[in-house]
Image (cartoon, rainbow, N blue to C red; front, side, top):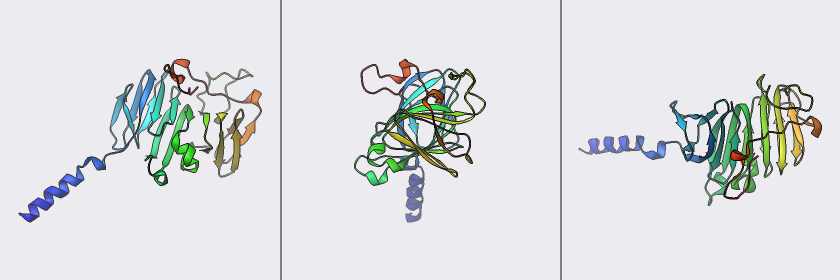
Length: 228
């Protein structure tokens, strides 16, 4: 009888909610189709007020913009054709030592405003791409990863932006780092790195690529900060 009770108890632990992925935030604005591939391999379509989970890979379809608000107050707005994975997300207001945000952008572009984690533990926040990793300094920034898919992005010369990672900083500062080096980009400045073997560099404002978002997605109708 004792053995049966033990088996039942162990089975209950295996199916406990504690084993499920943690909630990282929710969708606050959406125009179009947004999907999430969960860590367990399942997929689902998301809507406004849908939860996003640690381990999710979020994907926006063409002409879709999506805004995610995270539990620490940070926000991300995703452009059409973007794939963003929440590699890790840990936030407890009472335990700063547990802070962690790591996101991987596989394609597309975004604008991000860091929340409380970025203010109290900025070294615990990073955005990874195939060309470089973005570190933050209490920041509002934009990032665009061009992979022969940026034909609709306007430039001063009229040609599509070159392939690689383009960044712009609205406030605070970021770092761009890869195996070739690191550069800090401050508010009002632009940066670019072509690939993981190229040195990240600052670019003149007239050559910089600014990631823009529709006001309906980037602005809070009830007040508060915008992400656009």
